[in-house]
Length: 158
Image 1: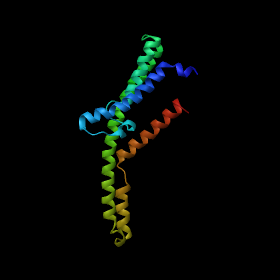
Image 2: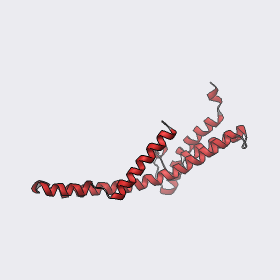
Image 3: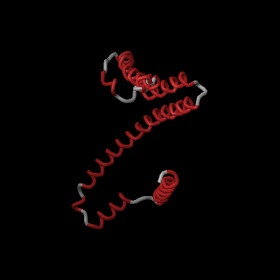
Image 4: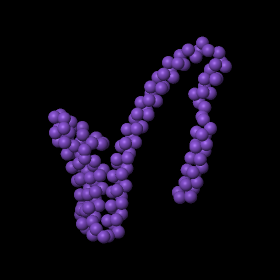
């Protein structure tokens, strides 16, 4: 039952719950609307990811000293998590834009293929080549990506 006496762990867990709960009054102050779903949603102000890792690192610093190796590990971990929490959120937004464009393009594709049954086989083949083809630079980049990934996986993991 030593886990019950692990202060850094409990401080971090508390920080997560606090950050999630405090999103509700902050949202209320900004919009004058109470939204209880914010207590379990991702994103928003403040970041529970950042709260958790910064409180964990601080608690470890207090318990083991800010000059200890374990604090250095926790601090670097916190920096990486906070960087990713902000970067991943941005990238997810960018992906949403691309996915929405893909949906629009797909709808347009479906509309243009409705007249395919009336086309002869040669016209269908030519249109498919256009849709499925790659530029030489895309093929080259894909090959390099595959080679690089395979090399890294075998060198460091497999």
